[in-house]
Image 1 (tube, one colour):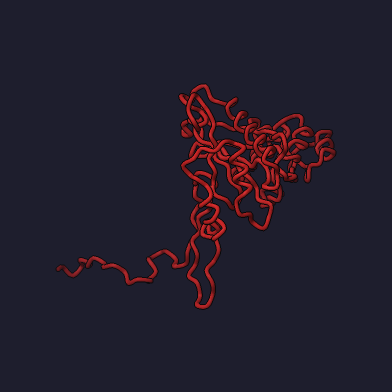
Image 2 (spheres, one colour):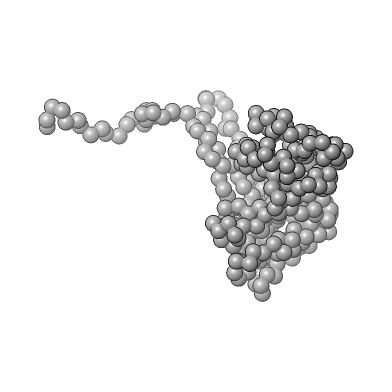
Length: 290
């Protein structure tokens, strides 16, 4: 072999640091799972004598979740009242769990003209008062304050958010404030808090928007898997309240069907509490069970 010719490197010994990389675990981006979304996590090596680190999703291995899973027939389509009666009978957590409804839509999520986005005020609310901020000036700012906005401002509020302050649930903006809010896309976009006309969060009537979202108006949009999901109440709600909210949500989605969508639009509906397995609801759409 020639002197200048290098020998191919063999496999590095186990545990040796690859060139330019760290041995410590790195957190990958959150998985874009179908519902409910579960963030993936990579744990650093545990020191001897210390317990394993808990991460989201580990509750699925708990005895409570396993027992609940045995009570739910994953192959069955439950009537809506039956589904919520079953959900409320499952082993409960030590807190009032949020109940979520996830709907799979018959659209192509890669085509922007088929995406579904909007907001809805549910008949019985969602059991939580939302923290709302508003981008407005002058009389509109005063109206937003009177409506109950937690923070109101313009360029000053935009700077506060840009610096990392995200202690709110919904952001409302008057159209003339988009010159400030438009710069916050990289901050608010990943949080799902960016004001949008389609979601009703960019509006000249900021006072009404603040009151509605503060009372629990639900904002939703299609994810990469063609799913739309939203909270529809708390486990402490009655079966009738949960059924009314779920029905209102699904019917509202049907009214937003894009003209380009073909075939059945609502293809699957699942409800679940924060720490319960999903329960599939029987819904007729286009002559087929969803």
